[in-house]
Structures are given as C-alpha cells and as structure tokens.
Image (cartoon, rainbow, N blue to C red; front, side):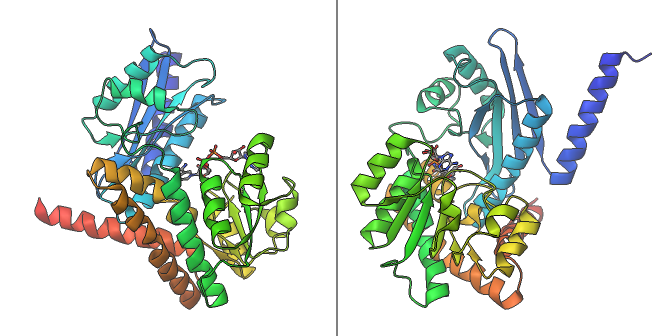
Length: 365
Ligand code: NAD
C-alpha cells in the first residue's frame, strides 16, 4: 500500500520529469543537506556544445515548485545564449532556495560546492543574483568548476556592456544607415554594473543619455560623472527617444509599455525583456521597433566566463563580444527578409548550431 508521502513524491517527480521533457533537459539534481540547511537545484539543460555553464542564483522562492520552474527556464536560456554566441558551452543553472541576506554561510556554500563537484565538470557555475564573489570563493574550496572569481576573469559586466554597445550600434546602422551614436537619444533603465559601463560608452560617443534607477545614490553619481539626464522610473517609457536600453528588470516589453514606447530600437542587457516571448516579440516587430534579442546582445558576460574556462585572454573576450555586431546585423537582416521576429530567428540559429554539433557527435560515436 502506498503512503501519502509516496503519492506526493510520485506526483512531484512526474511533474518535474514532464517539465524536463517539455524543455528537453538532460539532468536535474536536487541537493539537500540538513546540517547546513542547503536546498538547491542544479539543472543541466544541454551539453551538446560543451559543459553546461550558468550562474547560481540565491532566492527566497515562495514555493519549491517556483524554484524548479525558474531553474529549468534559466538553464534552457543559457543553452541558447551560449550556442548563439558560438561558445563551446552548453546551458545550465543552479538555484539555492533561501534568503541571501540572512541565510548565507561558509558551510552552506561549501556543501553546495561538493554537489557541483559531484557533476565532474558537466556543470560549471558562476555568480548570479543574490551571490557574491565571497560566496563563490567558498564554493571554489570544494570544486574547481567555478568561473568569474576575483583575480581570475572577475566581473563580467564591462564585457557585457561592451557587447550591448556594439549590438546597439548594429541596430542603429540598420535603422539610420550609419552606426554612429552621436546625437542619438538613448534611455538606459538601470545604472548598475552593466548600465553604468554602457552609459560610459554611449556618452563617450556623443549620445544624449537619459537614465532611471531606484537607487538614488547610483543615479546621482552616474548622472554627474557622465552628464546623463535623470528621468522618472515610469517616465522612461514615454520619452521621445531613438533607443530604449533595459538594463535592470525583465519583462519590460509588455502590453502596457509597448503601447507607450516611442523609440525605434530596443537594445539592452536585461534578461527576458519580452514578457511573453511569442506575443510581445511579434508586437514589437509590428510596431516597427527593432528588437535586439536579449540573450544575443548580453552574451558578453558569458563570453568573459568562457575565456576563463578555455584559458583565453581578456583581449580575446572583447574581440568575441565585438562579434555581437555581426550576429545582430545578420539576425536583423533575416528578420526583415522573412518578417519573422528577431527573437525567433535568434532561437532558430542557436537550435541549428546545437543540431549540427549533435549530429557530428553522433557520427563520432
Ligand atoms: P545590477 O543589479 O548591478 O544593476 C541593476 C540596476 O537596476 C540596479 O542599479 C537597480 O537599482 C536598478 N533597478 C532595479 N529596479 C529598477 C527599476 N524598476 N527601474 C530602474 N532601475 C531599476 O545588475 P547588472 O549586473 O547591471 O545586470 C543588469 C541586467 O543585465 C540584469 O537583468 C542582468 O540579469 C542582466 N545581465 C547582466 C550581465 C552581467 O554581466 N552583469 C550579463 C548578462 C545579463
């Protein structure tokens, strides 16, 4: 006779396995340790192009089911980002369930590091939301499969910002015939790690830059350093501008904002900018706005991590991030010719590379 617990476990397992099938995940590892209070999930989505690389996020999820959904979605996103950037990396991600302000300690991260190590390099981790370099140093005490540590490739934000800048120039070239940003009106939402470096590139090239942020201190500093104009958190969607660069939150391309935006280009670092990929990806195109797919244009960060994995130089990482210009140009061209939204073209290109490498792998076996 089966118990209630067995029934619940079977239902939960069936749900995860069916989600893994829908998203086509290779492996999901549930990690639990009573002594440290660790509850984590590592999702390896696809390793056809190489080991699965993606950061670890620490978040106080409202339910364990939410954590599963998040890690499945994020790890799949990494597969597409890494494949499209032409890196020899697959996609993975990890989440630690807990409050990053109160529940962090050395023992917890070292226990997590042991779980990462148990995958023998199939999953390589890095910092993500809620995780600091210090936390990753603890993880690194138990496993070498960590990148982006202080003293190594470090903060990826400057390379991410450079990639966004170069991809934005490719969009401007398509829309205005020249890729110069001089005199262009550009709104940067969020002047954190990536946003500030992006503002620097834009103002150096003579763009008129508007900024918004919930962090008043960062806002004041960036405004005075780069002569950028501060605008309200909500006002940013109504500005008469050329480019909107979301560098804070996801889902800012939605029913509300798309009826307000007056820009002709959206190019920014934030992940998951389209609230509903299919619906808003099509809407943005129908409005005549050029949308640079987020996982294409913000790949500079993971390029920087890959440089560390493959022992390549910072110069290599910058040159690789500069290729985002060509990738953007190709995707915009294909989108224009086929009238298919840019995000869908980018997805297809990533899938084509994975499929081609998957086939060559099959032939080798
Ligand atoms: P960050 O936390 O350093 O900066 C985000 C900034 O946005 C903060 O200053 C925050 O105060 C601000 N913000 C939050 N809510 C806001 C709102 N409603 N309006 C305006 N500003 C708001 O993060 P980051 O590392 O700069 O990353 C920015 C975005 O780019 C994130 O979505 C991140 O996932 C994505 N991204 C970052 C990298 C990287 O290398 N750091 C790589 C790829 C993607």
